[in-house]
Image 1 (cartoon, rainbow, N blue to C red):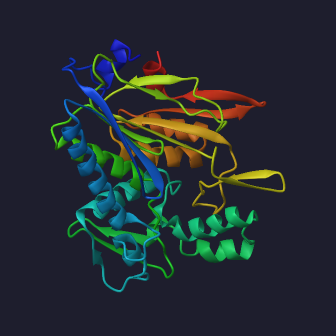
Image 2: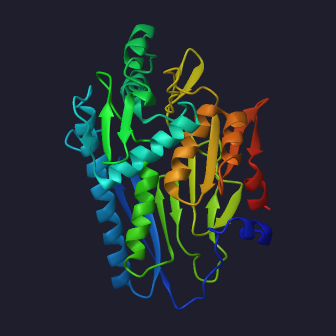
Image 3: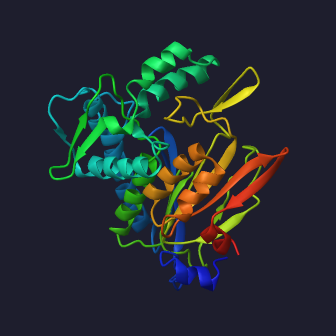
Length: 333
């Protein structure tokens, strides 16, 4: 439950609206390589369907813009310009994500970095083949990685990639942005009580009827275990990052699908990171950043950001240990 103290501190956490004979409707679709699950409370199925259509249409639009798989996406076309001879003006959607990403890269000294694309491709192969990339190949790909090589011009919303073979990867932020935009699309249909879950990146609207918030389970370290910790939240976002499902184990060492852009290696400190933030774009990207930074530096980062909270669950002496930010400790009471 949300304590009254915390609700006053975080204005984006809301109270439950009154019930108006609303019914719950759900829809699921696969987009951006993951499953999106949407829940809506509405007076009628017809109105709920309009909400679902608006949401999934918006997600499809963003996938066509930000996919690093689709060769004709706006992101892929931008990547192919490297090294960019002339700055490329980008769409408003892509600009918002690029600008947010660069701001977080600077704040984390590169622990979050969307220029990690060459390494992402390399580690995807490593997980398929169950073998680590060679040191020589890592060094080659690292030459094209570094947020400093992505230049943004805010006056005309243009981007330049300054070194050859760069490849942008928005996997640590695009799903969160899509969840935010899907929720906005649902609200445009005069539906306020809704939840958009982009495979663990969750954007929350007003509370369900008669409830103080949406009940959100905190992901455990073990992928097969149910959540044992819960929060009740509304009008904010929650995102979880971890290696419970995607990793490769070589010579007894476990490497996450989450890559440290500064070293080129998959993260080895096994953890589950959950972030609560005013929007899912911030929650998604912060979860990725904290996973790379580790508990101590990660919690310090979250504590420095207004209206953000975090819990990191890691193994200590073989047992799960939770490390909480200052605001999360109040939220969990």
